[in-house]
Image 1 (tube, one colour):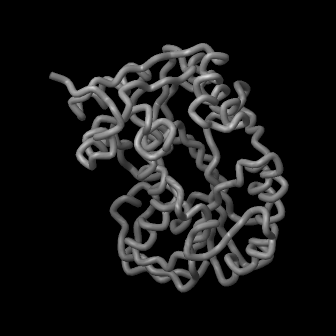
Image 2 (spheres, one colour; image 1 turned 60 degrees about the vertical axis):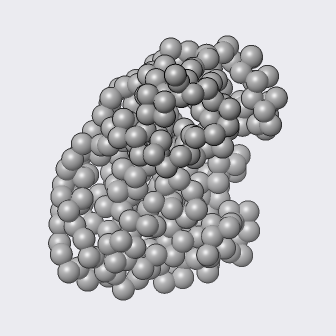
Length: 304
């Protein structure tokens, strides 16, 4: 990818690099999503030309419509990828990645997840293999659960607003991470040298139980917010009764189950390695989110 830089910084100091420019646009898939919107915003802040693409974005992109693929790739030098999360996600990712390389895209950065690393350490997620085998300089991001699920996911946000978070996660802990940190790592991988062939596990700075999460939200908002763990079967009935599609209920039960068993209850150092700083703490996120008023309604009980 041809670049012209006003200031140069290595990956360890990426948080301090600014005013970078490029002669080729950077494609951001899922540009209206939790991470994609932040990747696009941070790239623009650093002076890059961004081509934001999604089904509802400024540039139309649909994994199920290959007629939309070539237009988003034309002239791009790098791409941030978020898969379709459909049963054929790996097949479409493989086809799209090969087309991207054939179109001249040199760097591919894929949002994956820590959850897909099996205990023996072998990465099994087919979308990851598709990107690794594409021929591009690839980087894989493997984050833990996002802070922003509590404020931006409609199902979970409504629970917080209502004063009771319901999950089948038991008393497990998770190293929740800020989506802004994920985006900052993605921007570094898209624009700086030294990240090709790397898979970065990303987490926040500490492990949190759901009880701790809701307690911090309660303190920041002055509301009574509690956590109610349910067995998977009861959670499925609860979620289905609140309009969650059956196939998504199964996915939630699987992910919550991994939290319950402490499957990935360890801290990762990807943020530190790439950005040269500590990841943002959950308390800081909660304070900012509470001040925005996002949890201010919906039937929760005010503390007295």
